[in-house]
Length: 180
Image (tube, rainbow, N blue to C red; front, side, top):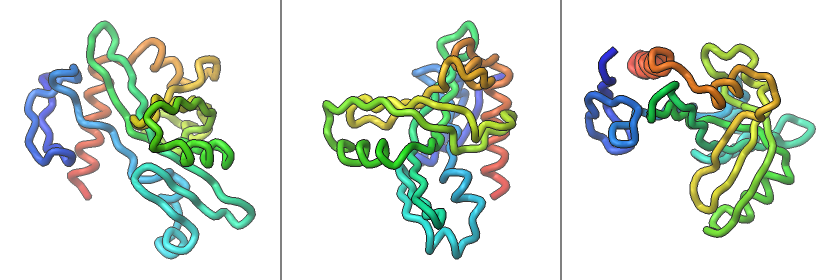
């Protein structure tokens, strides 16, 4: 497959021949909100949630579920290319409050545990995947699957995905976006 052409929502320009390298990155595979939010009615989203592009709180009636977004970067087998997802992770309320308290401090380093809160196509059961959230200062958090979890996503993070699979996922995401 040749490189991927796409219109970038971030910079507003057309990118042609993207191959996943640092010089010609693919578009992010983005998830707008946690799956729990997306499954709610518009009324419940309005009444029971508070959210930004980076953080989300959902009142579940007994307590508040806390979510944050970050980046999961998967290597492409045998190449310098990366397949990058911007997805959501559910974390404990204590971890969420700690993160929010230190969000703007450039020297802050945090390490939290959570579960994936974005439904990844081709990864059934991904909402239960244990994840690690590392905050390297002011940058968005880095999300990685827990190595010993046995989830296929942990294997992909360790061993990589094929170029063909990476491009199929991106093309599928771009197709979904064009249908909206």
